[in-house]
Length: 336
Length: 230
Image (cartoon, rainbow over all chains, first blue to last red; front, side, top):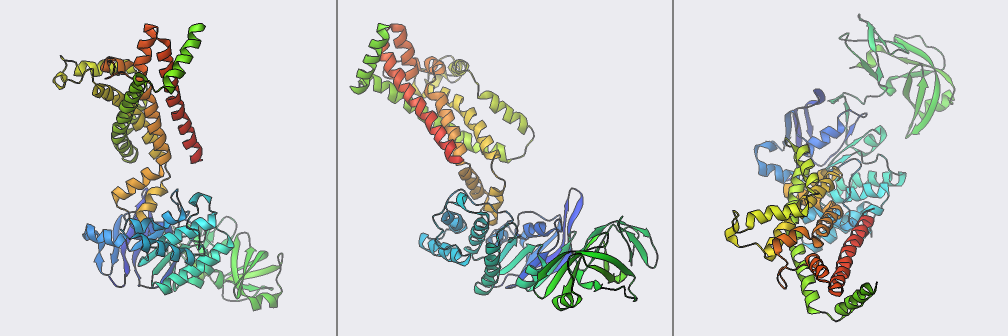
């Protein structure tokens, strides 16, 4: 088994009669870094748990380099050993850091000397060299996360699955984990699939970003999600969130949710006349920097996230409280 | 009051002189209760694990039954086992009555429900992530079970101590099933009963002291384990 490729085929997971995952097809090539990006409830954890054999899909499945695992129990057992998941909010066994990390190696029958070497190597990678004899219970949140990842790294799996590896941990640990993801991929040629709700992290670290929304892979990351209903269904329909009314292009009058890509929203100081059907006056309520971009949160009745370049931001001299106009085409609004 | 004082002095003399009769009784008590506890845990821990982790019809009732059986009266257990192993009983041919084995059977019946019930609550109290963590690291079903028991080890050990504490000082069934035969089936509790009724306070008190030490050390170790858990 040189390179492990994972191919999703007609994967559906239904829970409490609700479809929480529905992916007709997706192919994870070996030796790459993938990120699953989406809001809470998008199905990221469910997908990772299915890939890690923790839960069974309702229908469809995952093919591994062409052979479906469910055909043979032995195949499945071998595959489980090649795919390791580090869960969100991971659990460390109530013992030393060393015994935690060596657990997977021990049940694979590795000799003591080899285990010690692997444990040391994994701990160095996550920046915790010398932590072998520490008790798991005495570690901080960030350290727990890093030890849990080291426990996965020590197994040198073909596929490493990480569920929200950077959620709820300190900034220093976040930086280290970001490097670890890149390093493990380069050094061991491990395929890494991680979930996150941090889009800039997803783009920074991974070769491919897979935007997930409501259990489906969507064309682009879903942001600015708004609940509401279509109050006028026509060539150009009207979607009412209760606070603002937007012109949308809807295929069915049943839609209850829309989203707008922050990069598709035009920002101006004055109202501009254009073919775009949606234009709202709003007030900047939050400003944050991200690489070469600036993220604004603008209140137009609904709070919208808008992305502008630093150059535009500086030229427009925007501050919190600035009154601006947001303009976007009805066709850029995604409807669910 | 004088006889109490005399009793204490005799007790200390008997203990420090390593009196053969005293130590024989202590040794037998420890032997039967340790064997009974080991047998109970061999049955109780796996059974407790299965009940705690498997979903089946009547699970709640089963747990309630074992919780209730923790309060089994020792005399009733003695009576029940007696009726089975006495010469006229269905297991009479085995000749178990008035042997240490008979005491072990009685103590096994007393300790097992305690170990089962406390193991169930120990396993049920485990973090569900223990199971999934072991699975994601490649553990098979047996290895997952061992990890869960290992993580619950402090609570399970407390279950063993509680089972042991129940049988070490037990009088009712040991008397009925062992028959209190000197040098053969006489335990600390049965000897104390007999010596007291004979007026041999010194001997009875010496055994009483040792029984106290054994019982207290069980309690102390239990507290130590629970503190360590925190």
